[in-house]
Image (cartoon, rainbow, N blue to C red; front, top):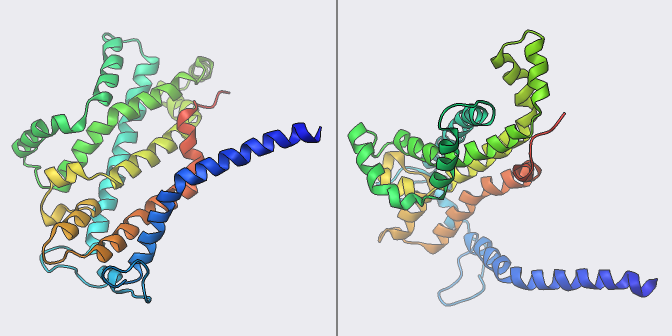
Length: 280
């Protein structure tokens, strides 16, 4: 019995050792990023000689006079991610319900189109999107980038929410209709609570996707007024006057903190995206 019990434990330790060895380079790189963000090592030196907060000066002063401050850029990023996630969830809730519950013409065509649109690379559409935004007068505006990002995220959101709606039994809706409730009332009071896990996961994923977006703001909103944190970091490292890798690492740490906090708090809800709605 002791040998039999010891073998699974030994296998687990082997697995932990392999995974630790594979993860070690990534952990070391993050550790050095944290150390370099609060220290200034001498040129060519591996270890820093002292503690220094000069790399975090972007929190209380402007890095470049021609660039907005970090708090304005952070606000732009928050607005971009929040409005994008709310828009995706609002449209996905209604569109996914229609695809799941209503039998309308060309329904199969719409379902197939969702998969095709989700699989289509964003970069291949960038020229067409650029022309359309210029025509609408939304180029180099935060509203234009939000509109594009939400539209590109919608196929994924609709497909995910349809899967959750499909797991909700028809009997729940039929019982509500027989009791005299309207179709909207049934959806709002009976069906929507059943798909809340999927809605919460979609909201978080859409927010994180908007928070980390780089290509769309860089191409469609290059001006300083609509700058987000991803493009702000790119401008810092690409500038000939403010090129500072210590500053770049500190801004990177500032940029990733909200993502880490959100993941630590809502990681269980994020796992619900792989499940379905709650039957009952």
